[in-house]
Amino acid sequence: MELFSNLALGFSTASSFENLFFCLIGVLLGTLIGVLPGIGATATIAMLLPITFQLEPVSSLIMLAGIYYGAQYGGSTTAILINMPGESSSAVTAIDGYQMARKGKAGAALAIAALGSFFAGTVSTFLVAIFAPPLTEIALQFGAAEYFSLMVVGLVSSIALAHGSVVKALAMVALGLLLGLVGTDIYTGTPRFTLGIREYADGLNFVAVAVGVFGIAEILRNLESEKTRSVLMSKVSGLLPSREDFKAMIAPVLRGTVIGSVLGILPGGGAILAAFASYTVEKKVSKNPQEFGHGAVAGVAGPEAANNAGAQTSFIPLLTLGIPANPVMALMIGAMIIQGIVPGPNVATEQPALFWGIIASMWIGNLMLVVLNLPLIGLWVKLLTIPYYVLFPIIMAFCSIGVYSVNSNVYDLYSVAFFGLIGYVLAKLRCEPAPLLLGFVLGPLLEENLRRAMILSRGDPTTFVTRPISAALLFIAALVLVIVFLPSVKAKREAVFQEED
Image 1: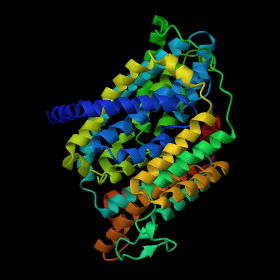
Image 2: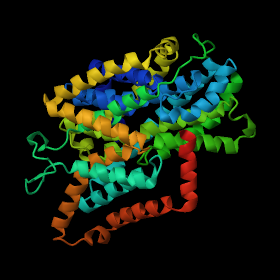
Image 3: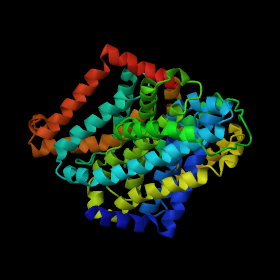
Image 4: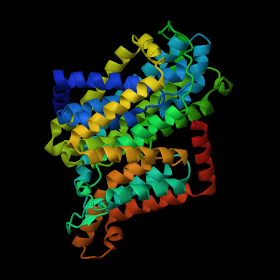
């Protein structure tokens, strides 16, 4: 009964006119940036963080959440129509979706992707509603040692699931942790790594770092290698799948939902890995594996269900533990901090309307997406013709205005420019920026809980291994790190990310 009363509170919060409006704005923006290749949900949310400062906390988080899972919908449109995934998690969809479009079944492919995504999003949101409250209760029992160990697990997992070299991912985490140390020491009040600049006494601006590393760097990278986008067809028809297509998509959607719901919780990018895992599973269980790569319905339905389920369940560690499962969730934590909300299990008890309002908005947002996406296919197709050299300068101008408006501090603009160049260089060196952002967000929390645990134990470092939960979490972190360096696992990992690229 408590669950139903909490859901009633959530729907009453999410269904207010203001929150419905921002949910609609979020899913439309998410679909838009998913359709336009080269921007991505992470960069867009980073750019929009300054705007959320002017909104109510619930409205801003509902809008940002809508952008994230809306981008999963939009990414499939470009993957199917022009063989260019708008989102990384839609890369698998392009394999069979584009082939379906070439056979004249573009409308059916888009409908299968939308319906599979809607089902997976609905079910996985239900899982969030069921599992988030008990996990919150468990998290309330955590002390400083347990939180420190949990964050170590999160950082190690982000290393394991990052693109490319594990050593490079480890270096990115270390760099993020160092950037998080900039500012005033929380216990002694001594400035650290500020280079004598007074404006950095409170630390680097999270918005400026995020916009630079993800937004500006991504724009520079795409301007350098703009691709010619040729839309397969200007008008898409036949948006209703046939009876055979419906039969062929049911089992893959169910399996994809399960795979995505589980992998989405993992730190580092569960939605992307879920899509690839689903495609692999479908190919192995199929009676006709030779169809894959030539327009198999299961090759579209399974991955699309998996990446959307993964996008929804990645909110579980955010809402219950205050730990980001991927860069977008790290940005969500940044948005919460901007609004004066301390991420963690206390959100559910201290601000239940916000906690359950976000969960309820996911159902509403998924319904909006499936109702709006298919009728607006023609509009999305036209947007694909906008050249980057027109689109990106406008985005950069709005980014600069937004970042400056947060603190009216010119040093934030310098930070955006600097970290934009850093992000571009990292991209050229094939270093994944996601671990850097996770390290930057978790760094101050990691340090605070480490020092607090040491103070409570009077300087005894064994407190991390003598407390059962903390010891178990550290063991998991060590096990993950060892497994990643095993030759067989390393080879499979490189093969997956090479296929994605």
